[in-house]
Image (cartoon, rainbow, N blue to C red):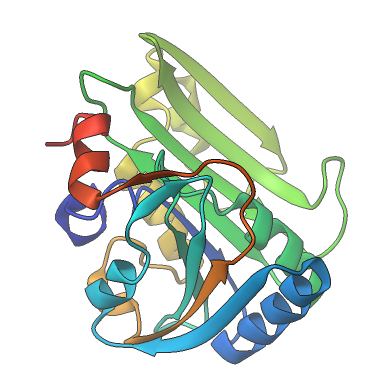
Amino acid sequence: MNLLGGRYAPLTEAIGFLEADFSQVVEADQRWRASLGGYAGHPINGAFPALLDALLPLTGPLTRYVWVPTAAGWTAYFDNFVIGGDPFGPVSYLAQQIRCRGVTIGSRAGTDKRGVSVSFSLYGSEPTKWLNLVRAVSAVQDEGRWEWTATGTVQPFEEVERYRQRRVRDRLTPDMLERYCGALGIRPFDESFYGSKGFLVEHTNVRGSVRTETLQQARAWHGLE
């Protein structure tokens, strides 16, 4: 299961969300990036897929990301990292700065070049034992072996009985991920959930070499073509 039928994967295989108004998120992000230097941002408009097109080409390290408003008071994050999105930093940090909840999800289909990965993480506004992570669960296949991770405080919407399944791949599935997000008012795989405007941020002072690929090249590298 993937947003837009998977045709924008790997761009859409990891998504971040902040439970805050779009303008509030953009303002907080701009303050943060101004303190770091080397970033520039501007508004963009268009149908949701066009907002993702603004991230292309894919790069390593990531050089562009976009904030997009949603229909439920959450603001979504996507970036152009060539090996798949990396929403952890912005979501974790800004959840504390804005004092709101944050969510990161991952839903990666397996191919002959990579394993399956399904993950859900919830962040809060206050420090926890590890940064501000409230809860994280993941089922990841790496080189044929499966690893299960569950840490933090169990949430009321979790289907904890599934975590006793013998096969790790059955403990957290894309369907479960969709239900977990739904309990928070997030519809991650529904195109209509996302708005038709965004705020694009570019890293203008990247040091060292940058790997650059078209979406088609990245999909081929991931075994998606």
